[in-house]
Image (tube, rainbow, N blue to C red):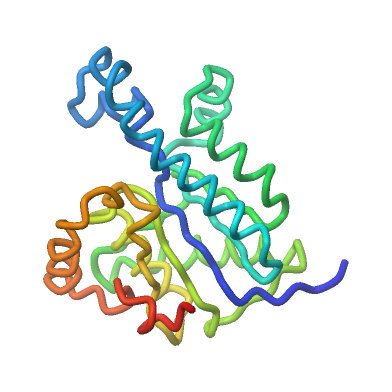
Length: 213
């Protein structure tokens, strides 16, 4: 198999999790209200993710890694039940083929402190091993872009953790257009403050700082 050097690595963290009634119920949202309202509210973001996947697919030097909020077995069940987050991830995988890696909730992703980073390093090693088994090669100089849910929590913490675990030379760009904050530009300042307060030095909201063109 021909080796493909990856120049852009995309991290999608818990995409569509808020459209899953089980997840919403765990977080205090009444199931029937969620089914009627919240799932439809999440659909525009999921549609944007499909559009972004189509863009990624046009660049052979790009790789997408999806970190789901559910287990592999639950996601299969959710797909059979037609849940939109699972259908979206399946569609993205069909669009990208080998250039889409899906890792479930059993793979540690979030490290609030440096001494919690070791499990995330194991996740990073697994991600890289899967990529290399598909002849997709990248190193610490790869450009990284993150999206998903929620921008102010799992996305910025997960992206920071993955960047640190891979000893990346450039910060990861958090692209708010593919997060749950896409329709709330007034929240950009809030996220900037969260990044500062949490001392997340490996992420940025500035694409130039991450050298994303």
